[in-house]
Length: 281
Length: 296
Image 1: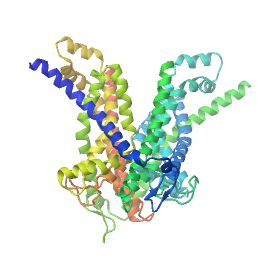
Image 2: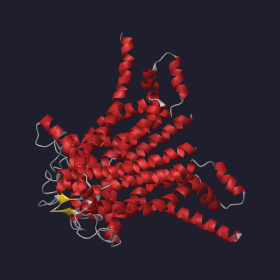
Image 3: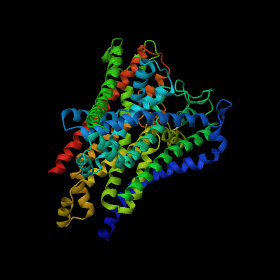
Image 4: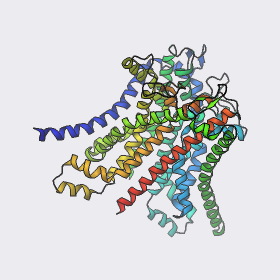
């Protein structure tokens, strides 16, 4: 009897832990979708907030988040990709390379609020940008860079050496081999990493708190040198700092759902790219 | 194109790529010096000992108190609670993924965990206010459930994906020969997992835990929203706490630049930075140890 039962209990324990982890995701999604979908409407995503943020939509916050994510990509992707190329294609296993790698790992572990302080000290005050969309984008760009380096290097590592050697053998310089042979075949992997990193950046709040986000702006969004609204911050303010948090709860749920949809859309496109790519291999 | 020109392009590109590599070191050094500079500015006004051993954080009081202890204890309490939940769940899930789940189940579970990792911290904090908070309040009879336990549970969810992914890598890295040797002397799957696979992967699992700790310690929005932020000295899991990250987030928006209070927040950040750096270095040490072990 016990001999039959013990494996079942053992297997059950592991299944239970795994089930709980899946349950967390499902519970989060269920709660947000079931309570948030009623506030979703075309008007909600296409109009500005009105009546002291108790009515209206979240259009400026959506625009702000999209622009912020774009700036983050424009800052982090070129530098991150170049650094990954250096590490994977050029760097020998020297002490310098080891320091660079250790720096990347540590940068990836630095808490996001510290990036916020760094952005405040360097971009907002040091470089006199003021609290602005550009300062926040630069801050998020710095935060995203280590992740882009790590994922790009992973993608480059998967390109077989025979391809590099073939390019060099027909007379290409190393740069030409990287530009015309290595990079094109690493693009899907790099893209997956980039999109996953951006989905994380789109949901970040702490780094933009002091570098440019605002609860309400009455000017149209999109100026680099001005403050902006963003979905995560909007959700934070609606759920904790608003004078009538209970009254605006539906708006908060709607904002949370839109934020999750944006993030998951980015994630799913990354999964799709990865899936397409794995079929070809 | 002429060969000379092509070679020149090649050299320039190489130089450019190397510059970006060096830039990474510069950024980390910059962050470090920024924190150091502002912390020194703070220590010129407040004695370091008062900062480290002070049991009261009250910058607007008269006289102002800049004791980091309550914040440090809050952060430790919430992180400890999160790890009590996340470590068993994480190792269990990682074991299930590496040793029990089939290919198909794995291809469903992996993206699920990645999705969990991608949920923004502010959304999890929001659910702490509207779902978990009221739930805890009903059980404990408090007016709202915004306390250390709430924050710990949410942080556990946030650090789980990290712990699972790294621990799974460690478990899968254990050579098959170890498991086969265990099976051949009559051990079953469970005994093999507990007495061979997990001990053999323990450096990697420790690294996973360390990364989870780093993640939980540095998290801002979740604890800011879910723990109530009372500035009194933390009394326990059922009381409101105020972590280092939350204090920075709340007060940095209100202080005038270049005041003692402003520098004080950078000093907190410096302590947090050193703590996460230490945790990461310890984690990395274990990962390296584990690699050596695998090569042997």
